Length: 95
Image 1 (cartoon, rainbow, N blue to C red):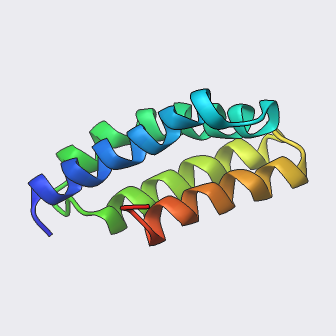
Image 2 (image 1 turned 90 degrees about the vertical axis):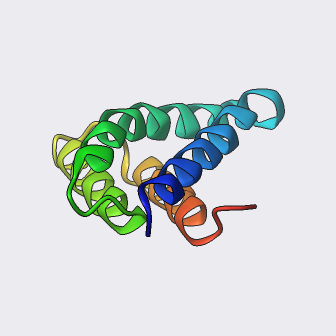
Image 3 (image 1 turned 180 degrees about the vertical axis):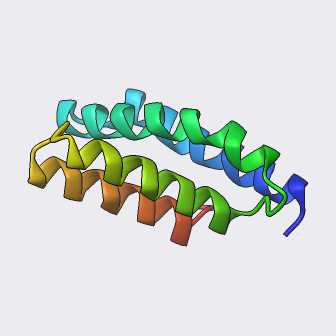
């Protein structure tokens, strides 16, 4: 995967997360906002990695979320919703 493909994925994911503001419920907005915050933190790490790819971004984000969840930042149900949203972005980047 090229650096440009990763950047295109990042833009698409940000667009999908931002669209929740217009169409989502309060719960969806909370989940998307929480994920977006963590996503923004790891994007620069992924882009500067020698292995710049969606897989690298996925690993970095999952590790970041695991750390946050270990500190009990969210209830288990909300943790699951965040992970499901992330997996939907990774597995269906153009939806």
